[in-house]
Length: 206
Image (cartoon, rainbow, N blue to C red; front, side, top):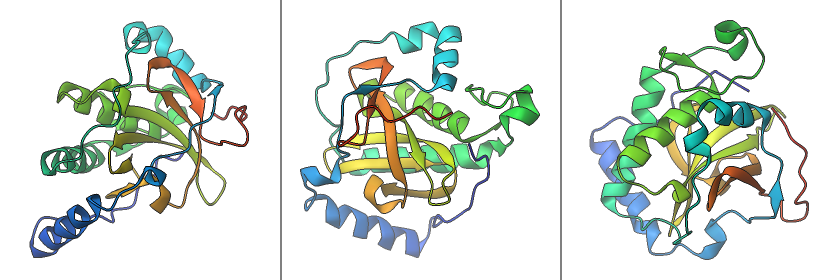
């Protein structure tokens, strides 16, 4: 998965205020179609499977799905701030260069990581801020160039939003240009569901 990143976000200032106002003005018009279509249970990415062996407690959480998190100005500031902060603080490095293997999911405590490591760190920070684990879901996508990539999905009642190391801008899932393959189940952190409603058995990718 890619460890590169491109800065596309708007920094605080007049332009940022206008952008936030524009985003908030669209929340009331959100519909159920702005949430990803969920299929059945599917295979767990091998990297996440190995991560769960060393972080067992984090992958054995069974929770009731109480629905998406209610979108507020506070929540929007939280997710955009975490996305920007982690993107700035973690430096891109491939698993092969850092761990000597092609796929290794880990928290970027060393200050380096690739796409899934950024996503794991964002998830950890947002959990610590009080957002339910059922609304913070590791997600596997395919980029337009065909490369596999990992991001964090934040479920809200105005749509599913994507935190991505390739951009500082938080976008709704259907505005990213990615093909969404699978993500963690909202009720079980150790299981994954397909995001291809026509094919619940999407093949595993690293």
